[in-house]
Structures are given as C-alpha cells and as structure tokens.
Length: 316
Image 1 (tube, rainbow, N blue to C red):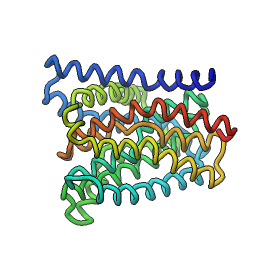
Image 2: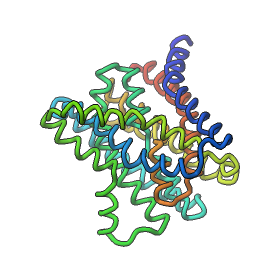
Image 3: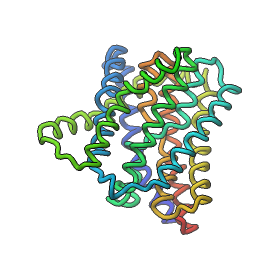
C-alpha cells in the first residue's frame, strides 16, 4: 500500500501543477483577463515557436549515436500506426458529426510525450530515463504530427491531393523543429550561447502558455453535449493505448527501462499540441481541450496503477 501511495504521490507531483495552470486559464477566462484574441494568438505562438523549440532542445542535447534503440523505436512507430488504423475505424462508426472524427482520433493516440512523458521518465529513472526516451520521443512525435495532419484534413475535408498533404506535413513547425535538431544531435554541433539561450527562453514559455490557452478554451457545456466523443477519445487514450503498447511490448520481449518507455509514453495524457493544431486548422477546439483535460486527470491514476502492476510483476 505504501508503495502505491508513493507512486500516486509521484504522479500527482507531475500532473498536479498542470491542473493548477488549467484551472487558472479557466478562471482568467471567466474574469475576462483572457480574451478570444489572446487564446488565438497564444495557441499560434505555442504551435509555431514554443513547441518546436522544446522538441529541438530535447533532441539536440541527446547523443543519438550512443542512445539509439532501434528495435524500441521501430516497435513504437509500428504500434502507433496500428492504433491509428483502429481509431479511424472506431471514429467512422461512433463519432458524429464527421468533422469531429479527426479531433477524436488525434486526441486518442497523441501523447504528451515531450512534456509529461519525459517528466515521468526522469522521475522514474533519473537521467537514464531522459536519455533512453529522447530519440523515441523525437521520432514518434514526427509520426504523431503526420497522422494528425492526415486525420484532421480528412475529417475537415481539407485534403486536396498528395502534394498539398505533403506540403502541410513538411511545413509543420513541430516536424521542422525535430528535423533541425537531428543533425545537431548526430554531429554534436555546438550552438552559440546566444542562440541556445534564446531557444531555451522560447521552450520555457511553452507549457504554461499552452495550458493557459487550453484552460481558457474549456467549454463544460460542450463537454456535456459531446460527452460521447470526449469519453471515447479519453477511454482509448487512457486504457486502450497503454494496454496496446505495454502488452505488445511484453510480447516483443521488452523489459526494464524499455518497457517503462512504452508504458509511460503511452499513458501520458493527450498532448496540448493537439488542441493548438485543431484550433489552427479550424476544427472543434472545445472538444480537443476537453479531451486534454479529461486525459490529464485520468492519467494520474492510470499511470500509478500501471507502474505498480509492472513493478509487482518485476517487469519494469
């Protein structure tokens, strides 16, 4: 019991501050201190500057040549594709209107690996956890963004051929940030102190601003009206994805810190970037924000239960 309480306390220490900022966004919106204009501009700033900077730093500071775990990365990419196909099928059957299907699919598979996932890894394994997960996060995040563009474009009827789709993927700021970081990491290129500090400033503002904008966009009336889609996405994210990655990882022979990567990354809540992307593309931003809030709350208990079970079985 004490072990479970310790793990639950760790989960609360990671996710608790996130909910405080979400609640602050709700309060500031209701008092009028945050306007629609601020939320629109802030979300765009997070998506185009903040998150790319955060991902760039995470990967650029990792020695890819020494830490690359290709079997683990290949498993993560393949399992993400399997989950995406299953979620697309579920959305086509159970999510209405059609415009909300991409929001549901993205909210169900897209984990907040770069922020919450890495925080979980550091708390569970220290610096070794960060090293083990950084490249996995970078490469799987590229796939997350590609699949997000695909599903949102389809549901919003914005897909106009392969060329336009490829252009949307290639110009995605998050993907650009990751691709720019890969040669820096691989070649261990030194960055000028001024440039490095500037990127750090941009990265540091990302999470608070993203969560403030997400909290300000929460629409609890919309949550009641769209409860089915929000619960389907949240249940898939909190239960389906961790089970798929963890049980699949055990079957594939992953143990210890490798299995920890799969569990903690898949059980992380829906990424705040999913809300920013939906809002930027003109989708149902209220539904996206509600999925982020629900999965962040549920991730606290789900992650604690998952860690407790795997440690009891001596697999992690």
